[in-house]
Length: 220
Image (cartoon, rainbow, N blue to C red; front, side, top):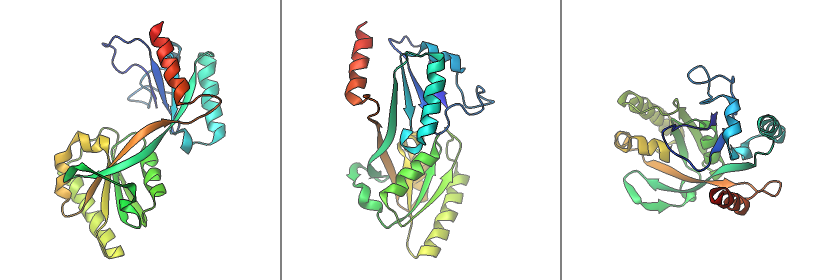
Protein backbone atom coordinates (compact mmCIF):
# COMPACT_ATOMS: atom_id res chain seq x y z
CA UNK A 1 0.00 0.00 0.00
CA UNK A 2 1.20 3.49 -0.82
CA UNK A 3 0.07 6.43 1.29
CA UNK A 4 0.44 9.96 -0.04
CA UNK A 5 -2.24 12.54 0.50
CA UNK A 6 -4.84 11.22 2.94
CA UNK A 7 -6.02 14.60 4.20
CA UNK A 8 -6.57 16.95 1.27
CA UNK A 9 -7.94 19.76 3.46
CA UNK A 10 -4.68 20.13 5.41
CA UNK A 11 -2.04 22.60 4.32
CA UNK A 12 1.40 20.99 4.32
CA UNK A 13 5.00 22.14 4.03
CA UNK A 14 6.29 18.86 2.63
CA UNK A 15 5.00 15.44 1.65
CA UNK A 16 6.41 12.05 2.60
CA UNK A 17 5.17 9.04 0.66
CA UNK A 18 4.99 5.88 2.78
CA UNK A 19 5.36 2.59 0.92
CA UNK A 20 4.60 -0.75 2.54
CA UNK A 21 7.54 -2.89 1.47
CA UNK A 22 5.52 -6.07 2.04
CA UNK A 23 2.82 -4.97 -0.43
CA UNK A 24 3.99 -1.84 -2.25
CA UNK A 25 1.55 -1.57 -5.14
CA UNK A 26 -0.78 -4.58 -4.90
CA UNK A 27 -2.78 -4.81 -8.13
CA UNK A 28 -1.99 -1.12 -8.85
CA UNK A 29 -5.66 -0.21 -8.45
CA UNK A 30 -7.11 2.46 -6.17
CA UNK A 31 -9.38 1.82 -3.20
CA UNK A 32 -11.78 0.00 -3.04
CA UNK A 33 -10.59 -2.13 -5.99
CA UNK A 34 -7.01 -2.26 -4.73
CA UNK A 35 -4.70 -1.08 -1.94
CA UNK A 36 -3.58 2.26 -3.41
CA UNK A 37 -4.96 5.50 -1.98
CA UNK A 38 -3.58 7.45 -4.94
CA UNK A 39 -2.16 6.53 -8.37
CA UNK A 40 1.59 5.97 -8.55
CA UNK A 41 2.05 9.24 -10.42
CA UNK A 42 1.31 10.99 -7.10
CA UNK A 43 4.89 10.12 -6.12
CA UNK A 44 5.91 13.15 -8.21
CA UNK A 45 4.53 15.42 -5.46
CA UNK A 46 6.54 13.78 -2.70
CA UNK A 47 9.64 15.27 -1.10
CA UNK A 48 10.74 12.02 0.56
CA UNK A 49 9.89 8.33 0.12
CA UNK A 50 9.93 5.88 3.03
CA UNK A 51 9.83 2.12 2.42
CA UNK A 52 8.47 0.54 5.59
CA UNK A 53 9.01 -3.05 6.81
CA UNK A 54 12.21 -3.11 4.75
CA UNK A 55 13.72 -5.61 7.20
CA UNK A 56 11.11 -8.19 6.16
CA UNK A 57 11.66 -7.82 2.41
CA UNK A 58 14.24 -9.46 0.14
CA UNK A 59 16.94 -7.15 -1.20
CA UNK A 60 15.81 -7.68 -4.79
CA UNK A 61 12.28 -6.57 -3.95
CA UNK A 62 13.65 -3.40 -2.34
CA UNK A 63 15.63 -2.74 -5.52
CA UNK A 64 12.46 -3.21 -7.59
CA UNK A 65 10.57 -0.73 -5.39
CA UNK A 66 13.39 1.80 -5.71
CA UNK A 67 13.37 1.37 -9.49
CA UNK A 68 9.63 2.09 -9.72
CA UNK A 69 9.95 5.17 -7.50
CA UNK A 70 12.91 6.58 -9.43
CA UNK A 71 11.20 6.01 -12.77
CA UNK A 72 8.51 8.41 -11.55
CA UNK A 73 10.79 10.86 -9.72
CA UNK A 74 14.48 10.12 -10.13
CA UNK A 75 15.68 12.69 -7.57
CA UNK A 76 13.41 11.51 -4.74
CA UNK A 77 15.36 10.59 -1.55
CA UNK A 78 14.44 7.09 -0.32
CA UNK A 79 14.72 5.89 3.28
CA UNK A 80 14.08 2.40 4.67
CA UNK A 81 12.42 1.68 8.00
CA UNK A 82 11.41 -1.13 10.32
CA UNK A 83 8.98 -1.41 13.22
CA UNK A 84 10.85 -2.22 16.42
CA UNK A 85 9.01 -3.45 19.56
CA UNK A 86 9.73 -1.33 22.65
CA UNK A 87 7.62 -2.64 25.54
CA UNK A 88 4.20 -3.95 26.59
CA UNK A 89 1.57 -2.56 28.88
CA UNK A 90 -1.25 -4.57 30.37
CA UNK A 91 -4.84 -3.72 29.52
CA UNK A 92 -5.80 -3.39 33.19
CA UNK A 93 -2.69 -1.45 34.24
CA UNK A 94 -1.83 0.88 31.37
CA UNK A 95 0.56 3.05 33.39
CA UNK A 96 3.08 0.25 33.95
CA UNK A 97 5.54 -0.64 31.20
CA UNK A 98 6.44 -4.32 30.87
CA UNK A 99 9.68 -5.68 29.43
CA UNK A 100 9.43 -7.59 26.16
CA UNK A 101 10.73 -10.62 28.03
CA UNK A 102 7.35 -10.88 29.75
CA UNK A 103 6.22 -13.25 26.98
CA UNK A 104 9.32 -15.44 26.83
CA UNK A 105 8.23 -19.10 26.76
CA UNK A 106 4.57 -18.04 26.90
CA UNK A 107 1.75 -19.08 24.56
CA UNK A 108 0.40 -15.98 22.82
CA UNK A 109 -2.50 -15.14 20.53
CA UNK A 110 -1.78 -12.14 18.30
CA UNK A 111 -4.98 -10.28 17.46
CA UNK A 112 -4.88 -7.39 15.01
CA UNK A 113 -6.87 -5.34 12.51
CA UNK A 114 -4.01 -3.57 10.76
CA UNK A 115 -2.58 -3.29 7.27
CA UNK A 116 0.41 -5.59 7.87
CA UNK A 117 -0.46 -8.31 10.39
CA UNK A 118 2.48 -10.39 9.14
CA UNK A 119 4.94 -7.77 10.42
CA UNK A 120 3.23 -7.75 13.82
CA UNK A 121 3.33 -11.55 14.12
CA UNK A 122 6.97 -11.73 12.97
CA UNK A 123 7.93 -9.14 15.58
CA UNK A 124 6.28 -11.27 18.27
CA UNK A 125 7.96 -14.45 17.04
CA UNK A 126 11.37 -12.77 17.29
CA UNK A 127 10.74 -11.88 20.94
CA UNK A 128 10.67 -15.58 21.81
CA UNK A 129 7.31 -16.95 23.01
CA UNK A 130 6.87 -20.72 23.15
CA UNK A 131 4.05 -20.61 20.60
CA UNK A 132 2.43 -17.85 18.51
CA UNK A 133 -1.11 -18.10 17.16
CA UNK A 134 -2.92 -15.34 15.30
CA UNK A 135 -6.29 -13.82 14.49
CA UNK A 136 -6.16 -11.33 11.60
CA UNK A 137 -8.99 -8.93 10.82
CA UNK A 138 -9.25 -6.39 8.00
CA UNK A 139 -7.50 -3.04 8.44
CA UNK A 140 -9.40 -0.51 10.61
CA UNK A 141 -11.92 -3.15 11.71
CA UNK A 142 -13.58 -2.56 15.08
CA UNK A 143 -13.86 -5.71 17.18
CA UNK A 144 -17.39 -6.87 17.99
CA UNK A 145 -18.63 -9.08 20.83
CA UNK A 146 -18.97 -11.97 18.38
CA UNK A 147 -15.26 -11.62 17.65
CA UNK A 148 -14.47 -11.65 21.37
CA UNK A 149 -16.42 -14.91 21.73
CA UNK A 150 -14.42 -16.37 18.83
CA UNK A 151 -11.14 -15.26 20.44
CA UNK A 152 -12.15 -16.79 23.77
CA UNK A 153 -12.87 -20.07 22.01
CA UNK A 154 -9.40 -20.09 20.45
CA UNK A 155 -7.83 -19.16 23.80
CA UNK A 156 -9.56 -22.09 25.52
CA UNK A 157 -8.26 -24.42 22.81
CA UNK A 158 -4.73 -23.15 23.38
CA UNK A 159 -5.12 -23.52 27.15
CA UNK A 160 -6.27 -27.13 26.74
CA UNK A 161 -3.36 -27.88 24.41
CA UNK A 162 -0.54 -26.32 26.46
CA UNK A 163 -1.91 -26.62 29.99
CA UNK A 164 -1.81 -22.95 30.98
CA UNK A 165 -3.50 -19.71 30.03
CA UNK A 166 -2.28 -18.03 26.84
CA UNK A 167 -1.71 -14.28 26.60
CA UNK A 168 -3.48 -12.04 24.08
CA UNK A 169 -1.25 -9.52 22.29
CA UNK A 170 -2.71 -6.54 20.42
CA UNK A 171 -1.16 -3.49 18.77
CA UNK A 172 -1.47 0.07 20.06
CA UNK A 173 -3.67 0.85 17.07
CA UNK A 174 -6.12 -1.90 17.98
CA UNK A 175 -6.10 -0.90 21.65
CA UNK A 176 -6.78 2.77 20.85
CA UNK A 177 -9.67 1.87 18.57
CA UNK A 178 -11.70 0.35 21.42
CA UNK A 179 -9.95 -0.50 24.70
CA UNK A 180 -13.20 -1.36 26.47
CA UNK A 181 -14.25 -4.29 24.33
CA UNK A 182 -10.92 -6.02 24.95
CA UNK A 183 -11.79 -6.20 28.65
CA UNK A 184 -14.35 -8.87 27.75
CA UNK A 185 -11.43 -11.26 27.23
CA UNK A 186 -10.99 -11.51 31.02
CA UNK A 187 -9.71 -13.71 32.72
CA UNK A 188 -7.17 -13.98 29.89
CA UNK A 189 -4.37 -11.42 30.12
CA UNK A 190 -4.23 -8.82 27.34
CA UNK A 191 -0.93 -7.08 26.59
CA UNK A 192 -0.53 -4.13 24.22
CA UNK A 193 2.66 -4.11 22.15
CA UNK A 194 4.19 -0.64 21.82
CA UNK A 195 6.63 -0.16 18.96
CA UNK A 196 8.63 2.56 17.29
CA UNK A 197 9.59 3.08 13.69
CA UNK A 198 13.35 3.08 13.12
CA UNK A 199 15.30 4.13 10.07
CA UNK A 200 17.59 1.39 8.75
CA UNK A 201 21.03 2.75 7.78
CA UNK A 202 21.41 2.16 4.05
CA UNK A 203 23.55 3.77 1.33
CA UNK A 204 24.51 6.66 3.58
CA UNK A 205 20.92 7.31 4.64
CA UNK A 206 20.26 7.13 8.37
CA UNK A 207 18.27 8.85 11.10
CA UNK A 208 20.61 11.84 11.21
CA UNK A 209 20.48 12.40 7.45
CA UNK A 210 16.68 12.05 7.56
CA UNK A 211 16.41 14.76 10.21
CA UNK A 212 18.83 16.99 8.32
CA UNK A 213 16.81 16.59 5.13
CA UNK A 214 13.57 17.45 6.93
CA UNK A 215 15.18 20.57 8.37
CA UNK A 216 16.52 21.58 4.96
CA UNK A 217 13.16 21.09 3.24
CA UNK A 218 11.25 23.00 5.91
CA UNK A 219 13.65 25.94 5.71
CA UNK A 220 13.19 26.36 1.96
